[in-house]
Structure formats: structure tokens, C-alpha cells
Length: 186
Image 1: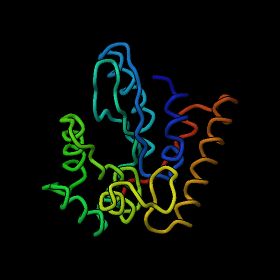
Image 2: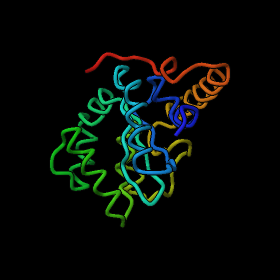
Image 3: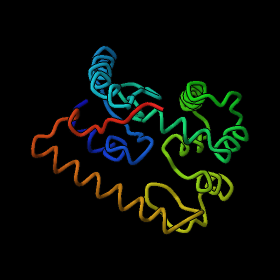
Image 4: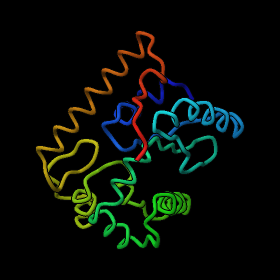
């Protein structure tokens, strides 16, 4: 897995304007995957980020790059907790929620739509998606919007601009370490 790939698929999280990004990746061996994750996390963790595998199938892995402090803040929202409770999450601590999400992804079956909460999507949009089964949204960008369309469109534009900026900077030689904005924990 290259730094280019992570930057292209998770620039808004690296920049600190999004809680998390989820993206698939291929790997040559489990040992190579562990080595790549360890090397990337040596750069990312001191900057308030973590890169973890959520699901592995064959030579493909679903990776989650996130900011633990932002995720804790997002999951602490009353609306988010209500969605997680309704989805059957027993414990609402971040680590337990991540473990449950990982378990649900690995189990297969119905996709866990509450995953939007782990990506920083507004709870009203996650709840709207579940309630309307993905139909009847106001607009579509990184997610389907059921709540504040204007705010969502501004965020979508910011994410696109951030990704374009980060890809340009990477092409000019910026490193992952240089692009990962450091944030204070908590």
C-alpha cells in the first residue's frame, strides 16, 4: 500500500476536516499488510490518526483511517448513540463500537449502515438513510443527504477541494508525514 493511495483516498481525514475515511486496498501477503500498517501508523498516530483494517477477504482489505478524538466526539452525540443503540450496539465506548462494527462487516449479511457515524456523516442523514432505505434523499455526495442539504454540499465541496489540493501537493513531493495534520488528543 503506497502513501499515494492513502492520500488519494483519505485526504480530508489527513487534513483534519473529516472524522474518517474507508477504502479498499490489495496486499501481497498478510505480513506485508501488517508491515505497511505498522509503518504508516508510526507516522499517523503521533498526529492523532489511526489506520486499521476492518475486514479482510483474500488479498483485499477494507481500511479505516480515522481520528480517534473526532470519532469519540461524534459517537458521544445523543443522536448517534440512539442510532447505535437501535442498531444493537451494547456498549457505546469507541473501542467497543469499532469492535462491533468490525464484527458486523466480517459476518456479512446486511451492510451496517451505521458505519456513516464512523465516517463523520451527520446522524440525521444516517438515520434518514436507514429509515428511507436509501431512497428519497435531497442530494448525493459522499453520502445521501436527508437533513441539511446546503451544509452537506459545502462539506462535499471542501472534501473535493482538499483531495485535489493534497494530490497536487503529493505530486510535488509532499510526504504523508507532511500532509497529516497533527491534532491534540481529546
